[in-house]
Structures are given as C-alpha cells and as structure tokens.
Image 1 (tube, rainbow, N blue to C red):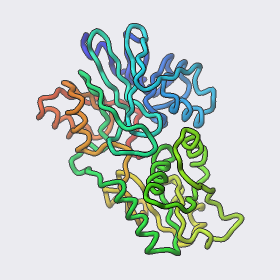
Image 2 (image 1 turned 180 degrees about the horizontal axis):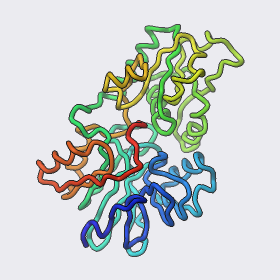
Image 3 (image 1 turned 90 degrees about the vertical axis):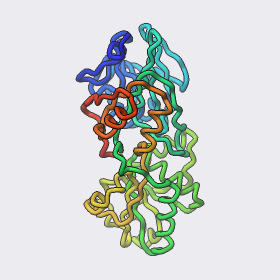
Image 4 (image 1 turned 30 degrees about the vertical axis):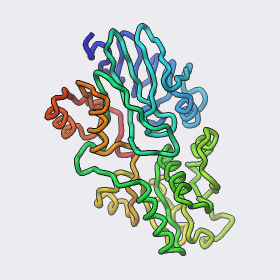
Amino acid sequence: MRPSELLCTTPAGLYCPPGDFYIDPVRPVPRALVTHGHADHARPGHGTVMATEATLKIMAARYGKDFAGARQVAGYGDRIEIGGVAASFHPAGHVLGSAQIAVEKDGLRIVASGDYKRRADPTCAAFEPVACDVFITEATFALPVFRHPDDRGEIARLMASLELFPDRAHLVGAYALGKAQRVIALLREAGYDRTIFIHGALKTLCDLYEAEGVELGDLQPATVENGRKGDFAGAIVVCPPSAFADRWARRFPDPIACFASGWMMIRQRARQRGVELPLVISDHSDWDELIATIREVGAGEVWITHGRDDALTRWCEIEGIRARPLHLVGYEDEAE
C-alpha cells in the first residue's frame, strides 16, 4: 500500500479512503478523528467525532453539547479498528487532551501529529514519539531563527517585573485554550500563590481544566465594577490577546501589556501589538524540536501540513528524508 492510498488530501482535509474517515476536517463530514480542541482543528457539525475525552469536553464547552451527531472516546494507546484500518491516539503535548493520530494498514503506519510541543507542560500529557513510516508534522516555527528560550525563565522575567513595578497591573495576553492555563500553572510552579485574575472569556476553559485535575489555584474575575482600579495594583490579570485593544484593558492601573507567544521572538510583532513585556512561551515545537522529533520517529517520509514548510522540506532533503508540503487550507499558525 502506498501512503497516498492510506491518507490523502481533499478540500475537507486529510482523508483515509479505506477507513472512510477524516482527520481534523475543515468542513462537516460523516466521521472525523480530531487531534485537539483548537478551533482550526476541531469544528462542529460532523456526523461522528472520535477524540480523547478531554478534547470532546472542550468541544462541548465551546460549541454546545450537540456539536456532533455522535461522539466516541479514544483513550491514549487504544487501538480502534475502522473499516480495516487501525487508528490509535497518542499524547501530543500541545494542550489538554491533544493527541497524535496513528493510522495503520497492511504494515504501513502514518502518524498525523496535529499540533505538538516537546517542552514539559504541567497542564497536559507529554508528547510521546511514535515510530512510523510517514510523519505528518506542522511547521509553525520551522525556521532556524526560532529557538525558544526556557519557559521557566520567561516566567521568572514576569515575576521580576512584578517586583520592579509593584503598583502596576500586569496584563498577560494568552489564548483561551491551553496557553492561559499553562501560564497560570507555570506561575504556581514558580511559587506565585496570590490570586490571579482572569478575563471572563477564560473562565469556562479554566473551570474545565480544574475539573480534569489541573490545579490552577485561586482565580477570580477581573472586574472593577465593585472595586477600584487600585485594587489591581501589582496583580496578574490573564486575558485573551484581543482584550488589549478593548475598553476592558483601560480599567486597570497603568497596566503593563505582556503577551505569551512564540511569536514574541520577533520584536516587530511585539511592537505592533504594543507589548511591553514579551514572553516567549509557545505551545508549538521550535526548529530544533521539530527536526529532533523527525529523527526520533524514524520516518522515511515527512508531510508538512501548515506553517513555514520550505526550510523544513529542504532540511529533510539534505538528511535523505522524502518530504512534501500538503498545502492544507484552514489551519492557523497566528493564534499561538
């Protein structure tokens, strides 16, 4: 069996003809296998969705309980037969419930990684390399310039700023699913035990993480209706990045705008967003982690779904690994 006979690209996304299912389809399909809960990978309206239990809960929280006609839980490591194809889910280390999906038939194994990272994260299961013939990888930060610093060092910079500016609120921009909870957990790990205030848009997913056993400590709503601006002096307020431009952000005392993202390595992006304290904390693998992962899984062929595919394709060619971009449409790498 050729790899293209087991998985191929269609306008709806990656499709498995012998199993008659899609992986992370971008439009409604009869059967979808979903790697994780971010909106560019997990969409509502499918006939049946198979995903990890946490991902299904995230989809229900975001889209409502009727987000699909039916749902099926896939546990990590479980082997599920679908039309003669063996499918299994393995931790991807991206966000809570995220998974790589391995599909196997007639001795050929392809692993669709979805989005993944290799850094330790207290809020989700760590990435597990899965040996395969074809590895499907993202390329969000697939340029040698992207070598992310230690997450704990970035949190230490935030803590140092709190000491330096005790009268100013620190507004930390972080995406609602995964990044916000990770930043909070890293702060707790660093010994920050004060109340952390959160924007209302983060509450549902923070509550879900807590219900799944991820301890986030004392979280309170970031509102000033019943208090004064000064009540937030020296406080950490976690919010979606879009809130920086909202009237909501002007409620706080002389706020320091922080943004947790791998894109904060690019100073121009930080300046464009008005970020005073950029925090390079990414939920994606950097250049070194991408190429280390490709080596570790031992694939003879690499398919690249989205991101900066040119440099990674060229690196694979130099290493004697067949590689090609899939040019899939509908997946974002800006919302990191």
